[in-house]
Length: 329
Image (cartoon, rainbow, N blue to C red):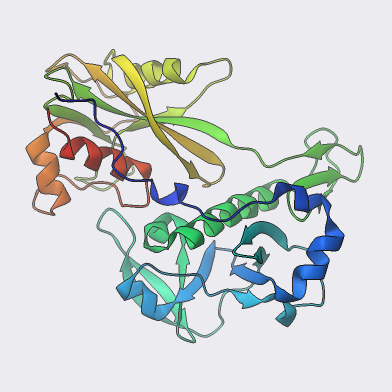
C-alpha cells in the first residue's frame, strides 16, 4: 500500500545535540565557575565560523572552538551562552574575521561556487551556504548562534521608547535602559509547501517555481510568511493561490527547520491540486512556475537535467523535494 511521503531525513539546520539549559541563563555563579573549562564558538560579522580544514573535504565538519580561558577569566560582554554538551558549556562570541587568509572554493548551494577564507588550517564557513557540511552538534550550535547574532545586531534600541538596550541573561534578553521593557529573541513563522498533482497518492508531477532574482534554471517549492491572525494551513492555501493561481487541498504537515536569516522558522507542508492545473505566476514575485515529473526531479538530483537546478542541501526545500522524488506514486 502506497503511503503519503514523509521527510526521509532531518533537515540540516534542525539537527542538534546540545542541551540549551535555559535555567542556567539565570545562574551566573554556576556559569562563571565553569567558564574556564567552557568552549567558545567564534563568529565574525558575516556569520562565518571556523571549522577544521581537513573536515571540509572528508566531512562532516566540526567547529574549531576556542578555550574560554584564552579570552577572559569570566564571561565577557557580548558572550552568549548556547548550552551544554557532554559536560561542557558552549558559548558564542563575536570576533573580527581573520586578517590574513587564503581562499578555497566550495559549493554554496544551487551549483554556485563560493570563495571561503582559509587561515591557520581552518576554513571559515557560513550557515546558509554550508550548514549541511557540519556535524549535528556543530549545526545546532551555529544555527542558534546565528539566530542570536542577527537578533543582537538588529535590536539595539527599544521598540517602545527608543532608548538603548543592554543584553542580559547571557544574550537571551534585551533590557531597555529607559523604560525597563524586556524583549526576547523572535522567530517569524513561514510556510514552505511542496504541491503535487492528484495522480495516485503522491502525485506524478511537482510544482516548482523561481523568483525573478534567481538565475535561470533555479527552481524550488513555494514559501511565504504567516500573516497576523492566520492559521498555518490557511497560509499555505493563500500563498499558493497568490503566487501561482492554484487552489490546493489535503494540506498536511511534514516538518520544520529554523532559518535564522534573520529570524524565521520554515514549517514544511505538502498539498495536492488537480493534474494539469494551469499556473499563473504572480507578477513581480514569481518569474516562472512549471510542472516537473518525478523522472525530471530524479535526473536533477543526479545532476543530469539541463533545465532544473534544485535547492542546496542546507534548505528544508531540498529534503522535501528529494523525499517526494523517492516516494512511490
